[in-house]
Length: 184
Image (cartoon, rainbow, N blue to C red; front, side, top):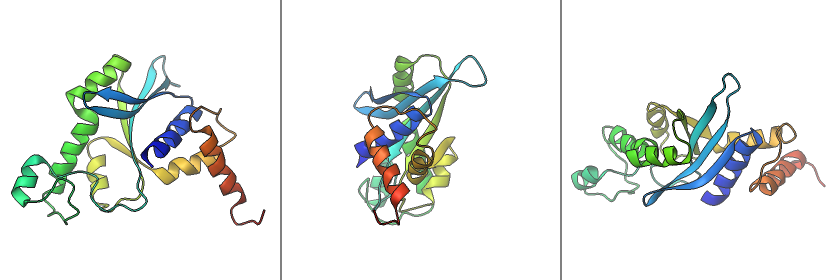
């Protein structure tokens, strides 16, 4: 489902005039999407780094436990065990760093487009532990529910020019939305 969700997010960005690159390598990791378009208010470029995590039936936290936390609590990194409140800010901070702020991610973005000021977005599906979301946002990450991406694709299907990889899927979703509740 991750690739399908990324394709739809990429299509959403393309329809808004962004040029996108998906799966930029950063060591053994990758950046889900980088998106760039001319700024409407200046002569520069608007640059976004978007991470997508789509789930319709989440069973664990977004942020894995840190190495120190796995030892302290005696739990696996992705354990669904209910964490104490003091654990979450630490695991979320490490997750944000790993996904967006680490030196290797900065270098990967600069290899793609040097000297840009990047904004960060996290597109997410259902979340098992909602308390993670404000902690993620507190690090300067804009949160975007996946359903908002789909709604915009459906509501504005004729407003934006069609992009590439996700066009057919987005058109099918829009078709469904248009005829939902009617018998065809």
